[in-house]
Length: 289
Length: 335
Image 1 (cartoon, rainbow over the protein chains, first blue to last red):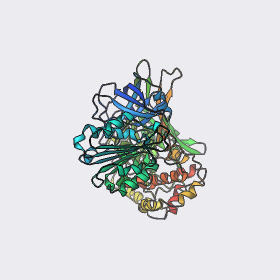
Image 2 (image 1 turned 60 degrees about the vertical axis):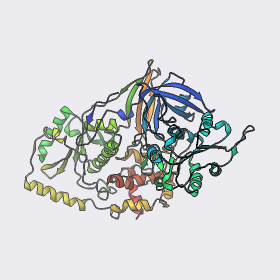
Image 3 (image 1 turned 90 degrees about the vertical axis):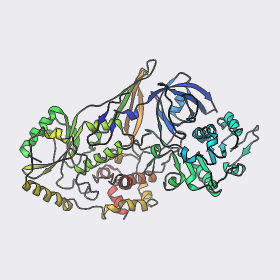
Image 4 (image 1 turned 180 degrees about the vertical axis):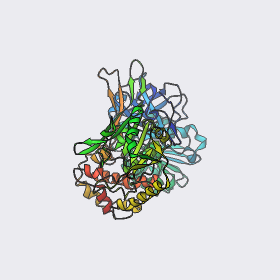
């Protein structure tokens, strides 16, 4: 990777040639199947350096010869060791190619990019996590951050909805979180199977079962766009302040550096100003939700 | 500063010794930017080129790096070190490059663009009149260059007054018989410069300072639905636009699969899949939403962020559109 500086006449900045688009090498350390569609990858940068991310940020993962895809980081920066974790659904060319890779495979990583959850502003508050489907992947980073720094946060609650019981992610960790003091975990599914004894139906119905002080809480919501609409209504209706509701948007973040245009919502590059936005900001973006 | 007209060919041919010189040349009944070998190849009386000069700063296909997979991964960035002069650029296109400069340097800079830009010199040529009946550079305040050029030539009969822009212009100045402009030259220049107001009349029909507000008010307008029925999603408007810079990134493996290149290519927000994500969602799947997004970007978003319009009024998109959707008509309707 060359970083030979090019000073551009009259400008305040210098830049390497193409450095923004050059991936760093990384190695897949371990792979685990979570569901039929999702796998979990532990990745380590080839130079041994930690990723240095904030919960909620994403990386661009390269499979050379196939392409690049934006993937949210699923592990907390408080995790021990230099590796980080990605939870990837097999949904396209790049993610399909990743699903065929095993430990020892080399990939490319750019990032971390974007703005994650405002961990400093969230300190001291009760935190309500609301995850729909694969939305748990980016939220897991923040959840484990809160669990690892348990004394710095108030009560914690996770409402997690999946399509069916077999779509539930991180089931072993759900149990671990549930047994963490001051952490209520509630799950629900849209369609139950015979063995399921848990909740069925809308995620918002779980709101009454968790013990948090909504007026002092922050709500972190990640899921499909349809979920945003009704979850927002319920969460705000329960008294969570608009300025303390954070959502993470899914968009096609092709370049990750605010240039290629694909992830734009109105005039905002989600890859730079997001993917995590306070609701007070998203409310003014017509294309957001 | 000024240069005698008789000295311009000598200057250009001197440039050719040190730089690749590209300029408008005839192409069919129109003009296109192309490499020139001698002064007389240039068609300096051109109206507007088919494609804007952005092709030299953001090539239609641009290799980002080569990768090879021999046991590990070796990545070799592609660096284009061509030193190039784009000669004869009109002020609309210069203003568009100036905007690209801001957009691509902002935040995390676009390395390949910055590298090319540092090696690219722009010699502008002032327009005598609107290129065609639907040019509206006067309305978009782009009939004079705000920045982005190195030298800018203004025809005063027997000589050109030469404005110098970027600091690196001195490199070019050293290669021609330029001389200081005296008072009578500068007076004649300012007279012509001021007269541009009347030579390039407003064609939008209102002060474009109000355009961002009109567009904001028109967010839910039926204008977009009406356009939707005509647009073919072909993206020609974005291809010919001098300020469109969106791109897609593609990996192209070698036949032996042992390596390959990653390149980027022009993409546009009018293409149906532009805002689609893996798994099938499309955040701008409606054609009217895509048309609105483009118009908002050209007439509002950049103005709000950088103080300048992304639309420079060159008229290329209206001319390229098979369905005769013209951004000028859209702006007019918003009043």
